[in-house]
Image 1 (cartoon, helix red, strand yellow):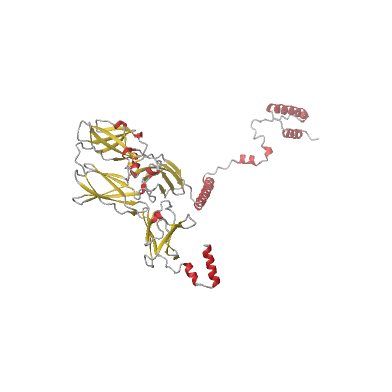
Image 2 (cartoon, rainbow, N blue to C red):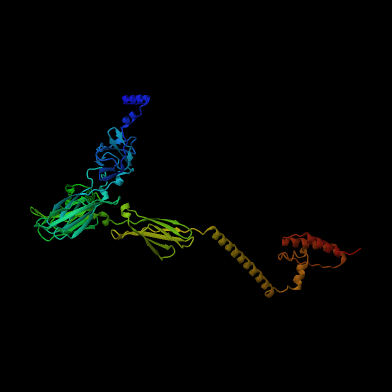
Length: 545
């Protein structure tokens, strides 16, 4: 490199510009066009077009992700003579943006880079066809499906994101039957023995809504009819804390055994045939039913199957019956929360079971005024209820229950009733009510006093008291000091005077004083006014000189 720079410096000094062209590669090259990437599962194909004559130039590519600072050479895409290259980036993050660029090369000359639009591989990738393997029974075919891109990085975490469509037909007729499943093993029953059937499988990513191409068509022959029929019509019922498994069988004097399998295992790509477990109480029964405890399984959903045996001869397994324990579990009554307002109640009904069980429920609400037994029912699919047109300051009660019509067709019992009082009216209404109360009270007061005055007037006019006699009226007209003795009835004295002649006036006066004193003592009252009156009277009896 230093030697090249030195040579270039000499050229500049010597003034020979034509040497520069040789150092730069000698000619200009057109960059590639229409750069694009096509992805199926983990298989990338980088494509482009070129104006340069194919065969005279080569092409090289580089890539870069959001996590990189520098461009890296793309493995498998260096000095390519064609206009495409294939590669895999198994160690690359498929959920972030990635860039690709390509340039043309000829000798020491290179064209400018041309970049493809950036993209996220997971969103751009197409889904390849799933893998399919078949096994035959006398009246059934087992289909083992392998996830698209098995062993790769693109769909490694999407086992539960695929749904598969199986198209099967009898080769001789061509009439197709379509089976959709999310399981990686599907058993197709009710086929004819010794008959050729063909099928193909398509994969669909549920969240990306992308479809794969169909797998290659495969055909298989069912076997000769087995001597022992398989158990049919598998049924499960619940009794208290136990499950009752029953089935139909045409022959007698045979024994049966039942097995179970967690349902999630069928949603994982791979072989799970050794994961089936025998139910202890159904390991060797001579009847077409067996009972086992409901807590025998640690999963909510599981499969059951039954097999018949007669010595060394065994039948094929019955159909695999999917059991969801929620079907046999009572729905608990819901909880309710009530928020009152002036003329309405806002009610929220809460399912008290697991979130998965609470999906798809129908809610029923009953409400009534506390002083009445007339109930109103409301039914809706939302847990929120708004009850309007209610009376303020009135107590209302509510109850609720939930229904599982869509899935299990069962209902919970009603919740405990909850009573709440609606709130009073707004401030304007309160003011109006207060004003009306004041006016009413004022009217009542006026009516009361008006009636009292009218009654008094009528009493005076029609029921006036008679005028007292003149002697009583004269008595009440005298000064109060004159009638004090009259107002005290127990103080009654009687005064008597005997006048014989004037020379005995002094003796009479003395006798009168003794009499008055004795009388006063008898009555228990003393009066200075009486003494004064007595004195005046005695003085009036004296003869004038």
